Image: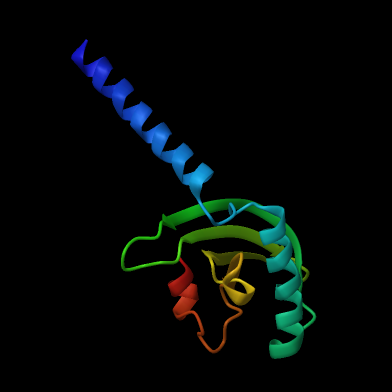
Length: 134
């Protein structure tokens, strides 16, 4: 009886923590349509402008959250770390890593999104293999 109670209590605490994270978070979810749309359009624009290629995202596969950091006394910005598998217009499957930050939008309003694709960051802006966004 004690073991069943302990398991139920642990599951209840985990479920409560998950619902608080999603319901009280200032950042949108990883699969939010506005976030995905922003990444998709900026991906194409950045590749044309910086890499001089006509590469775009043809399809988003699995999208998942890889980390969540709520704000605290020393870190005022809420951060949600995400990963997606994408198929690009050249037919290749690639890993896309992105970070959604609250209060970093225009004039401190809304959220901002930073992203990196394995193999498409020749200057290692986000570290080797997009390490700083993982």
